[in-house]
Length: 139
Image 1 (cartoon, rainbow, N blue to C red):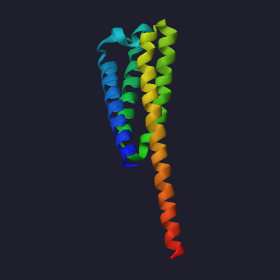
Image 2: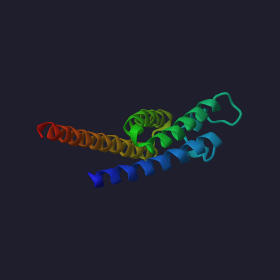
Image 3: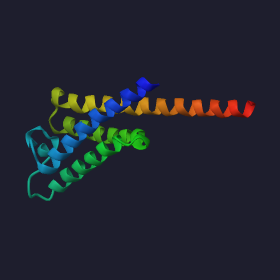
Image 4: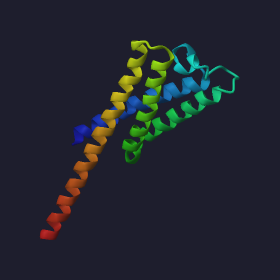
């Protein structure tokens, strides 16, 4: 179980780094040519629609922070999966290029692995706690 915990922590740090960078890039409008929000006219500096890019950037940074909190990790990873599904759909809708869909798809798999292993660890810990309580009752 210790290996699974280490794996989840490492995957969480990787995902957090990705989301922090992506969120900062959206908020500061850096590298707009790589951002689907640019194609949808959501990240034009000074435009009313830039607010949507800033909100998504803030959500990504908040999600990254949530991934680093052990008790919130599974829930936050599920919520970020919803955000990534939106990104995949937007990439497909804006201008389908398989290479531009691969990054959000890889992040989707990363978040799914975090949620899966985090829930597996929680279930194993709960099972151990129940066994420990049962052993104490038998004595």
